[in-house]
Image 1: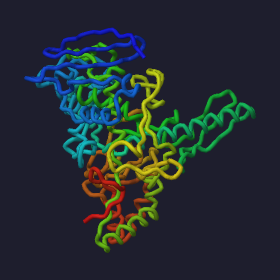
Image 2 (image 1 turned 90 degrees about the horizontal axis):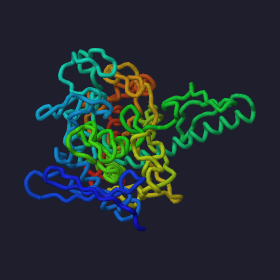
Image 3 (image 1 turned 180 degrees about the vertical axis):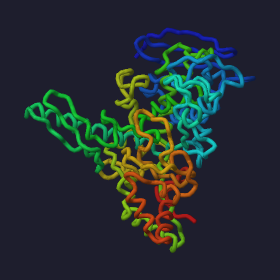
Image 4 (image 1 turned 30 degrees about the horizontal axis):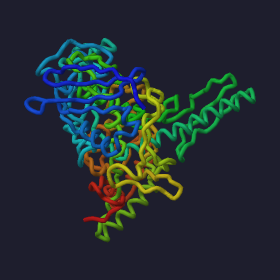
Length: 498
């Protein structure tokens, strides 16, 4: 079908950008014609979300472009840097030039996603040297800890009052994780709606248990006037939307995570949040990341390989692993680090219906993009069950828990998105043995130290672990060491090696 287009040509130093704009849409298409000598942008082609939806860009091309964006060392010609805005994109800052373009704490602090997500390869976790400083991006430029906080006006005085230091998480299997969160959210919304409907019919409050995929999130009470009492909700916000990303569980989708991170860490601004043909950071470059670009980078992360198990060939070690797996369950670790959750649909779809404003949402474009997690993406991939479902062996319940007062665990001072400093979403253990160090800020270099730091809701499991004999504790750790990122192209989720 022919679509009316308006051609505009913008000159960016020594390269040209041609925008094909469709009235009534965020962005239709972009093509870039760049010189290939001298300083050039890394990204010489931008994708059209409309072309993706129309099927003119296949999965392989979309995945490859997403990888390019994820691994690209963005430069000034791409639009890297945000000289006049902070990392939230909500406030101006005094212009920064040259050596002040980067800032380790408030950002931009990285040239590429790969710079932090690289263990054991692209898409993974990161060493302590790549730790990020969450919430520091609200500052224009962190240089003096006596500079007043732009939100509160208080003087931080120390780094811990400026930002929360976090270790980089791996993005393996993230498409399945996001879809699990969506299905669990839909289940809880249905329970909430059922409670309200029953309360209206009966004229009295109705309280129902919030259970989804074997995980309980407390109780919700529907009131006869259509309101709800969410005071007994546990482990999730009162909107009942599971936010599976960030270590606090505060980001809804890979897309939101990607838009946030590109602006915070690289100063690369997405059209869907910052507007078409706008330049809010005043770096001289507009339309730095198109809607199609963000879709590609999101799909790349959604289609990364599933982690798996590496079982030792040595019979004695294999026996220790088997015993350790049983001890992991009997100690109660598996009550939160649930070995598997079942995903009803094997399809990943974009965009997420629960995306907050500033990120692509259903209705912004007609239709959605989807792909089969069992057929497309990096290998190893999961195999569907006979009824088309996927067993996601991520060792999490996607629920937030209070982890107690141990200073190795509860060592942050800034509250992120209303989540108390002692509360974290259950860490996904699949692949974690390939991504040392451990805990949210990488302060544990041994798996045993990470277990020992648990408290709060995990205090009983920690006590059970410590009550084991030294050999049984070693067996449990030996089991956890099998949860690895497998070599690329592996055909199965369980291998024998060593």
